[in-house]
Image (cartoon, protein in one colour):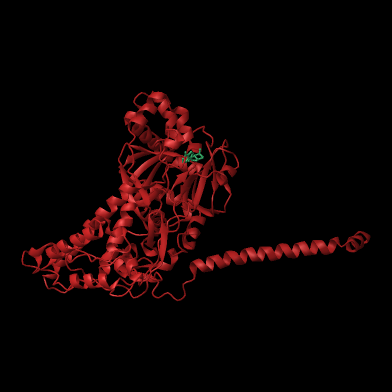
Amino acid sequence: MKFWRNIRTLGLYQLALDIITMIRVCKMFRQGLKGFREYQIIEAAHRTHPIFSFWDKKKQGRITFDTLDFIAEEGHFPPRAIQITQKKPSWRTEQEIQSLCNLLQVMDSYRNYDEPLQMLLAKVTRFERFGRRRVIVKKGQRGNSFYFIYLGTVAVTDDEDGSSAFLDPHPTLLHKGSCFGEMGLLSTAVRRATVVCMEETEFLVVDREDFLANQLDEEVQKESHYRFSFFRKLDLFSSWPDEKLWKLVPMGKVEKFAYGQLITKDFADSSFLIFICKGSCEILRLVDLASSLSYYKWIWQCLELIDDRPLRAHLKEPYPEKRFKEFQIKSYPLQDFTALKLLHLQKACEQEGTSLNERFQDPENTLPKIMGPKIRSRFPYPIKCSMVNTKFGELPKEAVVGVYMKVHTVEEGETVGFHQAFLPGAQRDLRPMGLMSLGAELIRVRREKFCELLDNETKGKLLSTEIDYPSDEELCQRFLKENHWNVFRKDLIRLLMESQQKPPFIPSYPRKKEIYNPKSLILDLCNIKKRSKPCRPVFMASQKYLPPLRIIQAISAPRHKIQELLPQYKNAGVLI
Ligand SMILES: Nc1ncnc2c1ncn2[C@@H]1O[C@@H]2COP(=O)(O)O[C@H]2[C@H]1O
């Protein structure tokens, strides 16, 4: 009693009570939050007809499938599937295993196995979810499990606690759909690396006994041999003995990328050397069009076409004499007097001491354009739009855009990532280039690890395969050319289709506003004035590579009617 009285006087009793209460509250919060999350996942009271059912003739019974059972918050492993993985393998029913197997198809590494093996894995796998910074496997330790990543990202590091992954600007990352932990399960091997979660990550785990019982070790060996035989076939390694090549094999894994999937934003800046095993990839460059002289010239030429005069000329009223000259020229019937106009214009230019090609550079120039009638002469009055300064002069703000241009295609058996790496820094092409898959299978190896094996002969071979990538100016000119051709092609198709006089096929669009609108990828120079506020989503380039910039795919500029360029098509349909 005395003891308790002492404690009471010391306040320790109260402290202990407080701590117990706090623990209880925390526990309730934890449970509450979990419950809340589960609620978010399952909540679907408003959904209609969640149960899909049909009569199975063979089984003479009704088969029902509650779609809600396998619905989860986007990307998360569904709660119903979690329940199945929590059961002992022998308690899982055939149907449950099949449902799990269907669900796991989203993971590339799982899908690669043949169907019977997939079913065996679905029977034994269990689910785990870990938070950021959690170490999953530790280098040097004995391995007990093999992991599929259902959601999230992990990093593979050489240190024991995985902390380097958060300091390294280019850590080795494994994403949703990959697997790891197989090497430590092979006979006497220990973990070759540490794997740490970069964010909250969901795994499907196969334990050592099940891994070996299902002969997954043989699958792993098969994959290693695949990598070895791929490297063996490359001319780059023809001088390497087998033992040396086997050192390269565990440095990377085979990764699959879907068509159009971005592999890396900037391969020169990343620390990887990439070998293309199957398919091909495109090297892409994000070009800031406003930094190109050709684009600058072209934009001003197009803007003049809008109403025959340079945009800036509208800001000042022309002298009466000039206005009269212009009136005279404009008042000719356009189609019949084009040649005459040209002659007149040339004379006028000579008088003014300018050549036709220089006209776009002269903001004061108010002479009309020389070709036939225009389409969309919408602005007979001054155009007002905000301008920005570029290195060549002012451009309308709307016209400062970027495009992704293909620089080069990398084919099967080629490598990416050592471009000009052996040149002195100042001579290197340091422009950021992205790599996009056209449906490719590749192996990524860390450059510094590869350099440990690199000899002079291999270096020489790498140098001999190097090519110079086109400059931004060349890419821009190519874009303008391709854009011109695409616009012409579309105009032509429209012209020819018009003749068929059938009502055009118009797909019915959902009424809801969509996030993706293909029109947002077209810069419409004819409506440049109207676009004070972009009404469509603007695709922005990454700040790291360029200033904020709208990304476009095509430019629709004021242009001459196609019938004028191809007089034989004047009566559309006659030639079809
Ligand atoms: N270069 C690499 N690229 C991708 N994964 C790797 C790489 N090195 C090791 N791993 C994986 O990281 C795991 C660490 O544990 P294990 O050695 O069991 O198996 C290893 C591989 O699955």
